[in-house]
Length: 74
Image (cartoon, helix red, strand yellow):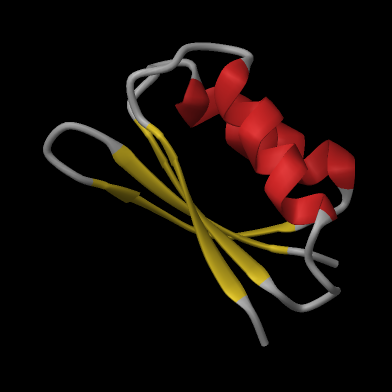
């Protein structure tokens, strides 16, 4: 299983989703992406993207200055 980290801090919508989509397309089913984002809309956009794209949002962790999303490719 492969896991990659995508740092989308400092960028705003739609860039976190663009970076996440690019990373997940390069992975195999079952691999994961750890996405770091500080855009406030990411808290809504990333869960919605995971649902509509058919990927699994495993966890969302609030840090001091960003949010960490763990997404599993299906």
